[in-house]
Image (cartoon, rainbow, N blue to C red; front, side):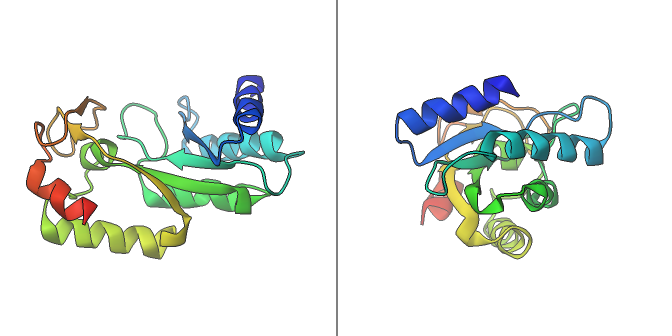
Length: 163
């Protein structure tokens, strides 16, 4: 947790608006304990932060291994457990969404995913979109970024996502 606080302090020194971070792992202790541990790290980090400090922006994950943050429900639960939730936002990584089984590569799938995100998390809390293609197939649970338009998501999907 000390490393996390140090990163936040650096973000403040740089006058950054956001500190984007991966959520982490439950380390085999189960999702509920993992979510509580991540929320505790956020709480300790933000305990003395000013109200105008950088937002901690949680990035979704591909869902590999014991990782957390591959469902919108997990992300929302972490924010809900944060004492200063107003200082917590979200980043959506397109390769991670695709690998975690969110069908952003189809028109209907993208509409379903954006609607679900808005319903579960809230569109106003989306602060960053990390655009990158995926080197691995849909729902593979593997995190392998690739060049936009050269991977499994495809250029046409990125046209829809950007627009």
